[in-house]
Length: 286
Image (cartoon, rainbow, N blue to C red; front, side, top):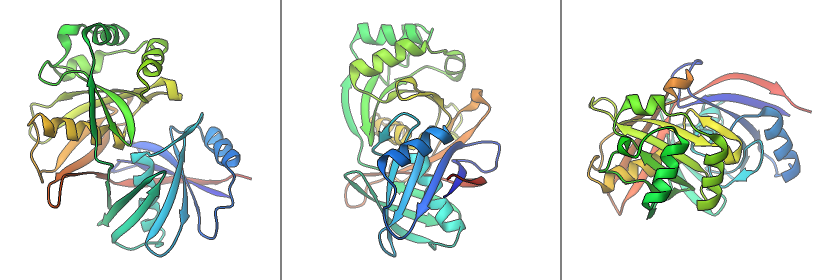
């Protein structure tokens, strides 16, 4: 069985978030146990298992090294980029089946844009929880951007969004993994998406993403979390409909990733996340 290794949300082989992609066209003949073992062996944050349903529709299941997750943005970008690069699809709109979700995918000029489940704004964190979270990242409560309170959002996956005042604070934050795992379990979230608004109009925000409870200490590009951030910033008036947004993530990890997003308001509100992906290797797993 051939596994492709893709760097998603990257312009070249040095940046982006690596994901495994396994494609099988005829039938779903991989057991859940087999998919989990392959994901554990590859040890990427997610591996996508892609099954072609018909000419325009694909189903994908996503596995971390430890468990299955319902949706993964960067692995989806990786999967459809691979399909386009291998000539298995052409530019245009495709349909993604992922768990209970049915989402549109737009492929054009090397960029994959995926429609995300409409994010849901959930509860703001109360002061004691916010203080504990700051302590776990070795920052102060005063470091938070008070215009964008700590809050749980669901955009395919459920995350705590923690917005700090500036890039310096973001870059020096260091997590206590055991505490972040405990907090994640307490609130039933995948992890914590930390961000700060950029003073430069060419970049919307800088981000870091932490999910130690799922076996991911830090992730250098996350489509679902940035979909949630896009929606939160839209609700707060920091981004406008139709504008292209750019989130830079993974900077201090040495794997700078570029995640693009848009909020469209035709026929209701929708959030789209996209980027490029580069195939850096392939390997056979028996």
